[in-house]
Length: 116
Length: 114
Image 1 (cartoon, rainbow over the protein chains, first blue to last red):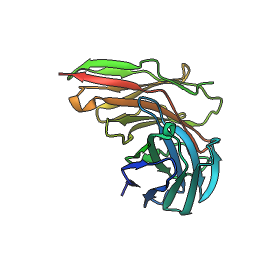
Image 2: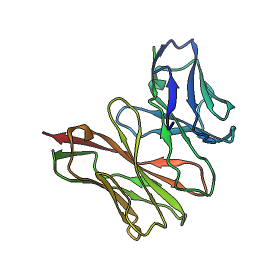
Image 3: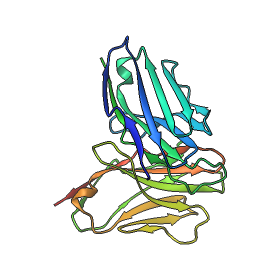
């Protein structure tokens, strides 16, 4: 099983709504990532969890709140978003052992978020 | 400073021909990995090929090969016998050993012409 599953695939939310994006993997990976991607741009790193601990936060606004309940699950809680937050949100996982370089990141299909 | 540079925003190739997508990188870490990903319009990032900084031989995976020139810090992707399904965005990425983070280039949009 080399799959990273993201739900929902599409999400439309108002600026006052609270919603969550979910990501799940069963490959035993200990690093999980959230990326934000605008059309025709590369993915921008938001957060990295390593062994269920937040290891990198790329100065993301607090209206995005990540959570890693266990080694298989990663959530992204959304609150009071702005229209410019509309984007494709990608989750990824990798083996996560520092000191190893030959471990690719496996990506989910993404959640297309529209903020109205 | 940009870690990964892809200088070709868009490329066209005739079906069944080969195409090379350019990628240069910048790192002071002697240990790093280089990756290529394909992203169709559906959005999923699909891993294609990997090259390690200590690998002596160029990586190959089916129709994909990586032309690794360490001294020039380049890691170009070669797609042989292009197919219509190869039309997509292609991203070059790097992972440094010291940080658990993947750096992505700006991408190249490849269009295969029948």
